[in-house]
Length: 178
Image (cartoon, rainbow, N blue to C red; front, side, top):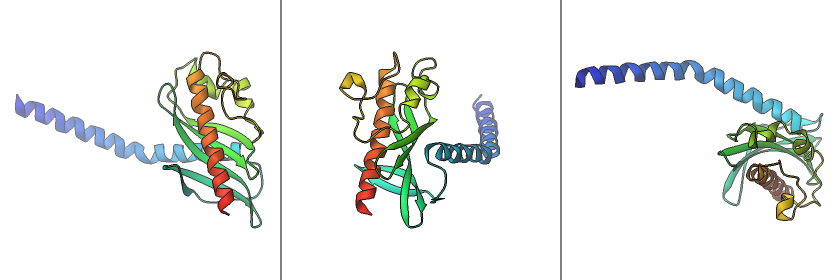
C-alpha cells in the first residue's frame, strides 16, 4: 500500500510539475501584456516610458514607471496593492506630476462577483477617478471623503481608494525627492 501511494504521489507531482513548466512562460507573457496595456490606459499619450522602477513608502515596496518629456517627468504609473473584501486588489494608478489622478486600471482582484467585482465594470465608480483632483479627499463619502462607493461594496471601495491614495502619496514623495 505504501509503495502504491508513493508511486501515485510521484506521478501526480511529475504531472503537476510538467504542467507548471509548460504554462509558466505563457502566463508570464499574458501578465506582462496586461501590465503594458494597463500602463497605456492610466498614462497620457506621448513621452518616453521608463523601465520598471522600485520605491519604498512606509515599509511597502512599489513598482512604478515614469513618463518623461525631455528631462521632465510628466506622469507616473504606480502598481498599488491593498486588501479588499475577497483578498488582494492590485491597481495600476496613473498620477500626473501635479498629483492629479489621470486614470486607474484594475490588474487583479479576488472580489465577490456581482458586488466588489464591480470595481472593474461600474462606470460610475471607475469614471470618478479620471482627473481626480489632489485637492479632494481620497476617502469614501461614508468616511467623510469625496469618493462615491460602489453600492453594497464599501470594503472594496475603501480598498480601491486606499490603493489610489497610496499611489498618490508615493508620487508626492518621489516628486519631492527630485
